[in-house]
Length: 239
Length: 341
Image (cartoon, rainbow over the protein chains, first blue to last red):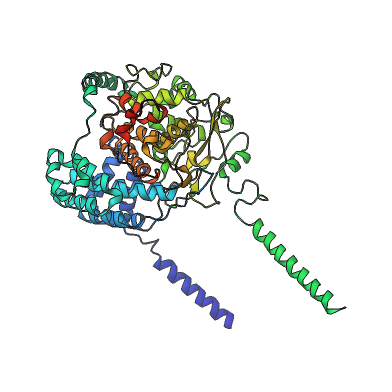
């Protein structure tokens, strides 16, 4: 009789676990979100050239907060990998204010210690490299949100300035992105930074002896690019 | 039996048991010599091929995210070599044609792809994709004549053109290697590629499993530029493990080492027109991120140069090549000034 009771308890517990796993009753909205995230992730290379990517991005932009929250675990808890960089890139394409906050959390996460071999074998710690790449991408994605969402531009710029001041690891990326984003207005940020950062505010120019060659090449390249790009379009622009 | 003899026997037994436990543990350790190819899934896949059909590894082993993978830059519709034998011959001209083991690594089925992800899955195809980034980043693509002198900057008038010729001329052989050269089975610390060089010999570069399946094609391409700097130029790493990449560190940027060359190429790839027919926004972003990982992770001394300071690399490549190569020109130390850390 005792074994019958044991089997009964197992059956009841098993059934309860199966029901609470939610596999059978995932809400349609969430399934849609996951599908669009997967589609966008797998088509980031083709990007806007892919219709499926464009459609998924429209959905993700309309559900930015939910999509950001869905990727939060991957960005903050998973070990560095290409997918983490990929998701960080994607957040910049659809993100809202919650995405800016999430990206800042990622930037502030301490980097793990590199496990590369000390001597002899030239091993690269791939996870460490991807962790670093994701943090750099988080800065780039914050700037991307600023360029895609004029209503969030001020918030994103303030975040980038704070990042450049507080996080030495990504300072040059943050300043580079600010320069791209703000154009000539970038110079107005000079007062936020010390004399050690002056080089970031001076555009690099080659020595005078190279200027004539530079001008000639720029003209030549503009002409060549026009000609060659027209000829190559059909080869490279599938879907 | 005297008690001393009994004691010796029990010590012997204890040692025997400890030895057996040691052997038992060793047998189940990763990379154990008794378990042939325990950590080589690509070698296993090749060994297990039936009727010439290989079940190529479809994902990187240490990524646990089903939604993503570094193969997204390997989707076949953006590979111009896919449809052109002439382009494949051009890619083989980088040293693959002279290389060993490519026959097993997808020569017969290079255009197979994963039907779900649309990613090409053979090592050869993924190597072609790496070289594609070198070739199609410059708009002349496979029409570029790589035989001109590397000093001819009227012909190689962008860094991307120059680097394509540099990679061709400065290495002899690219070998395929199915081994996974990592610290342990599940380790993410791995050798991507290895270059053997020296006086009076033909240099060669071995590409390991990590090259094909653990890193994306942009990283693969920059790795090739890196390795080629080790090859015929014989510039080895000069750092003293004083950076996160440890034995792959260079002392400083101005030594013009493999890491400097890799960064120069990534910068040139980044500084291409935004409507480039081959370089997509995601690839450009990836190049920028990889550039920064090298800048922070591969030099003992901090690098002062950043992406902004390399903005003209595709306009006046000779300026950057001469600066980066300053360590090869001890008679003209002033050339090094611009790159000094």
